[in-house]
Image (cartoon, rainbow, N blue to C red; front, side, top):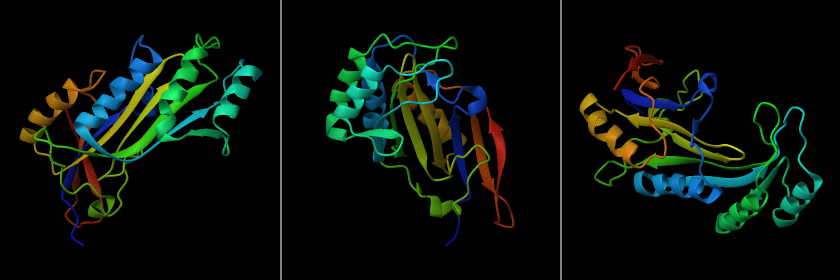
Length: 216
């Protein structure tokens, strides 16, 4: 199969830059609504999962009562407490009832409600952007873990709210980006960074992709 020549990647944000975009002071339900609104306007969702988890939080353990409430409503599987899609609003209500969440000296909370999944981007006209599949790029993955041909998003609601966004836009030209980026921005609850765009182009020998930093 002939590989696609290029893809423009937005990595928002790499771990070195915080891992995700902060959503500021917003409620549990508003954070979810703004994230969901972006998905419905700009993407086709392929596989989104919701779950509570209790990440290791230095100097702070989750209250036993809190853990019991989460476990009772959403039984654990491994280290997570999966939330069925049709019960996400019940999970949001539960998290809101636990606020304000305790935090350690670094502002970290011991209880998170998260969402994560693969999406396919739409065009501003509402069509699905073509060639969004990893096989079109030989399953190439960038050093920061972005798979060309796959876009992903995440939402984390704890004491802070944040959204991760990793976009892979096959064969996007500069003219495409001039239309696409403002359209995406209109539907996002945070400001896209101009510093995290890269065009990955297939090398002449067809063995790998090379990066070229963009500042759209």
